[in-house]
Image (cartoon, rainbow, N blue to C red; front, side, top):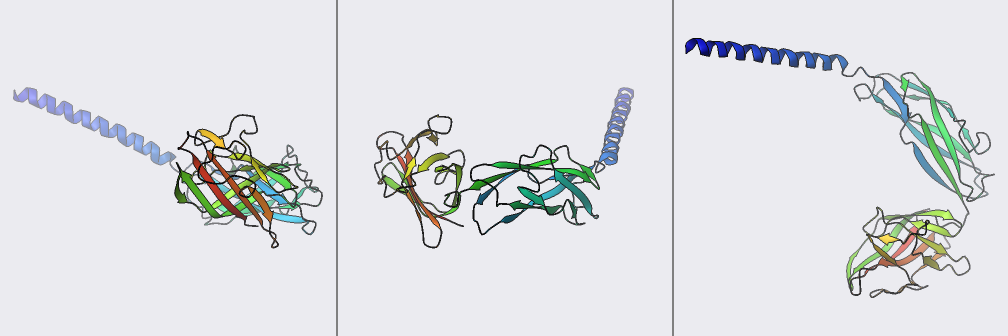
Length: 296
């Protein structure tokens, strides 16, 4: 029995030694490879958009685009990273006509991982709702350049009376099944689609995947919430059909031209009032009223 035990003991010892040797080999390989990958320069965001409200007194707008890097040990470097950018041949907006690159070279300083490229938008000849894309690309770097080396900035030129912008919620009410369920605040984005057609991003406590569209009558300033999206499909809020003033079905709040309109204040700020909701059956409606004030 002792001989049998000794043989098993020797075999187990050898097996453990083999396992540890194999693991050491794997660890050694990882140690050799770790942190040796290239440092890749790229734009921090590959797409962005800029609302430009036409104003004869403003002929240019400076806009900054962050450039960063990643790779290696994914820590900030102790050396500068030099980056060169240029306008892509695919850019619809023309350099020298629609915009200027104030500099084509920039430095990400040692100890930091971002620097901003500056683009000067030339607004004089831009036409409202003739949206154009600036496409920039990174052409070289003192380290290496990412395969994703371009950035698309959409210039959304808008009429001076546009409602597009970021709004503070001055008053927001949410009604559930006939009772006031809560008040909400924060900010709301309104995006221009075409003259007098807008997208309201989110609703109340649900900012994601709950966009809806509305029009504005320029003569009366009355807002009409639409029951369909841009593809003609029914608009759903939280999975249920949107409620509009025209469709009725409101049980808790008033929905008419007094609660769904826009006004330009003497201080130049737009005030937007919207009433909407979604229908989950009689006695189970979800209704929203909000008063919004544009930030700029």
